Image 1 (cartoon, rainbow, N blue to C red):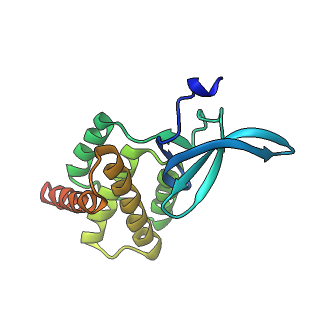
Image 2 (tube, rainbow, N blue to C red):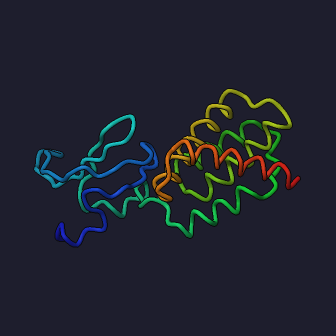
Length: 168
């Protein structure tokens, strides 16, 4: 595939399941496994990483959420939280799966349900750290997708979660 036909180009925002949201800063040839390969340099808030061009179909990489998917996620956030399993191991597995997959709608549901659980009982350390991290990641992607300041996205997320608690 020629570089001009790539789905991602310099300046695009992308989401990596492990590294979170980042912006493609440039492309350049990099040595990978003993041979030069064209790569994207992606810059996140916390790090830089290289993604070989042609791996855009990688399930760990996706474009920033579209306005329509953002609306669906916000609708899910406003709904009544779903009672989570009593077994902490089941909850831990769910958290791990959602974080690994990095799907926006699933992150919204997990945030809503963990937030609701936190109102009923104390979250364990894994759950508290996951909630904080996923909320930050969700707000960051919301800010980029909606072209709003990060502080505004955080405030809107908190407000939306409070609405979900009123649905109970």
